[in-house]
Length: 81
Image 1 (cartoon, rainbow, N blue to C red):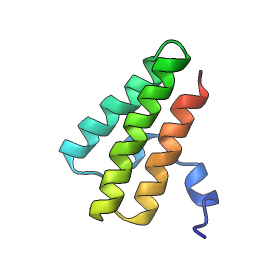
Image 2 (tube, helix red, strand yellow):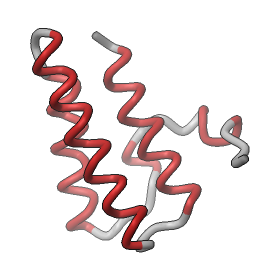
Image 3 (cartoon, rainbow, N blue to C red):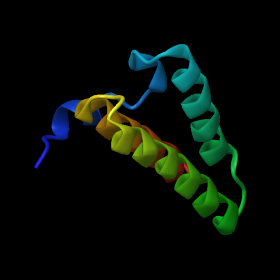
């Protein structure tokens, strides 16, 4: 199992080094999670963001640590509700 404690401190998308196209898309998805209103909209935004990250994971275009950090960033945005 991957050790998460080091990534728990990194909860900002700006802290990650990502290609600009991914940075923009993920930033938009995380903003959607943060801005969502109502339980249904929040859940839908979370699922969309997580699905995008799962696609990146399946394509193996980012490291496991970066994928984990992205999931934590999404979780962190959702916890603000």
